[in-house]
Image (cartoon, rainbow, N blue to C red; front, side):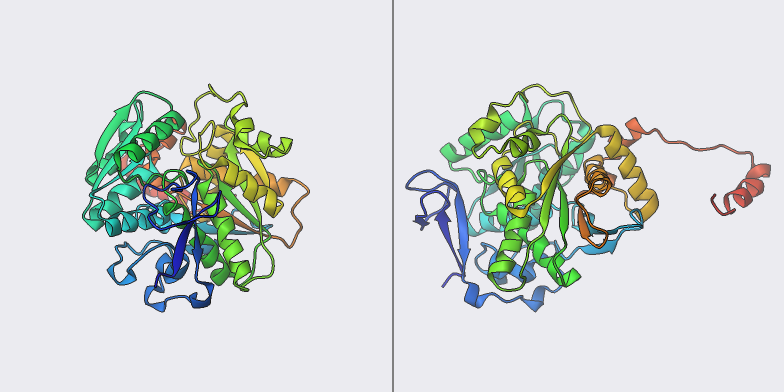
Length: 409
């Protein structure tokens, strides 16, 4: 007997054959219900997210394909020395980002149903994760992306064996086209939007479970960089699971950080929109380019779920600029020794803005989701903040080293 069942979030109908990921009755999005009575953590996977498999939609756990994803560190921040800020360091995942959590769930499902290929739409982290887990599972991987995506960002996907397909169009348009094509052709799509693949959407719930075990309490605030919106809403669902199971008695406030020119969700939240059509009517068709490419969605595919999570939790959306994000990236590197991508620097900038307001009390605990490593985005950072070095003569080296040994002011 399975520990979960698949059902339609719209009409409630139980789905006996959930592929291709839409309700057979009404075409609605799918979700999952779990056997709460059987939920307990599996200590065989003590160092990974798979200790929580009984709250994930996976089949034969003894045939699991994984790279020990999850189980990431929670570090007290020195950058925010005057506040209670903790850093959930998702750069410790196998490919350097939190996307390893959803892709591991998606690829295990693909393997279980016999899909030969895992397709994704991605300009970065999702494509790298998909390539790695597909390779581990013995599947082919294909990544579709807009033309103009820098080769430096794409090469890790190629190095991991993925086929690269480039297409004209904005990322949100490409996502919609690929979803339609994959559904009509019966292709397995692992992209990290709920409508693309509901299985992957459950993966980031495990961040909530880990935080509860690591902290031993519920933080007042969780700050998440928002691209598609699925990570924030998944963490919120994770806390709803913990509440339902009686592990906690309260929930955190969710804060979504957005690029300043891609802040449709903030506007929709402030205006009280409750339907996605109203969001699509906002004028975000042609925003200026941003270095925060991982977050730069005009209309995030899981945006309504993110809005609902922020609203239900009593949270907020915070817009940040490229300049603020780069500055925060540098501060985190110098203060905490974490080198993150600019899009994660945006999260740190969001924490700074949250702390500068009047909402946070002195004893509040804030979690910042450190979602992606900077080592994959060095070419972006280097262009904006060029390398500085000094060239010295051999007979001057001792003097230079001694000067460098003096305490900083």
